[in-house]
Image 1 (cartoon, rainbow, N blue to C red):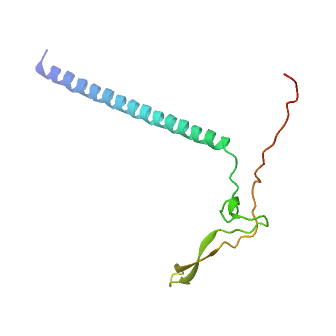
Image 2 (cartoon, rainbow, N blue to C red):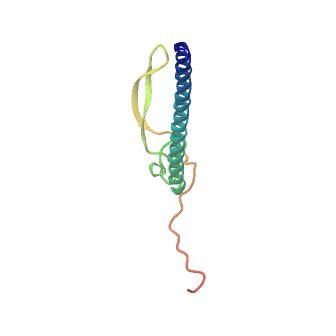
Image 3 (cartoon, helix red, strand yellow):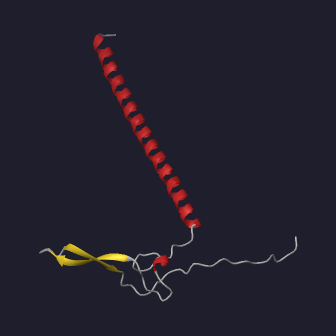
Length: 121
């Protein structure tokens, strides 16, 4: 065989190796991406299961906890109210005061409940 034939075989062989290399890189990149998605899904599932086991937080519409409200529903949390604004209507000064919300609206926490066994063991 002539020398030019070997050059042609070498160039085509190099091209084939390049395409195999590209395919391998793409496959590894896809595998890594899918593995990261599975890990994120497992993390999300654990977070959702932990959240499902907790009772609902009794939070008022004013975003304060039920413990900050009295029996009549008045909130006793201290908040800052704006007292001065700039030309863009953004507050520049604040003053401390109590929250103005009047009623807690949300899930009522259940008290302790004792129930006797229904059947004898």
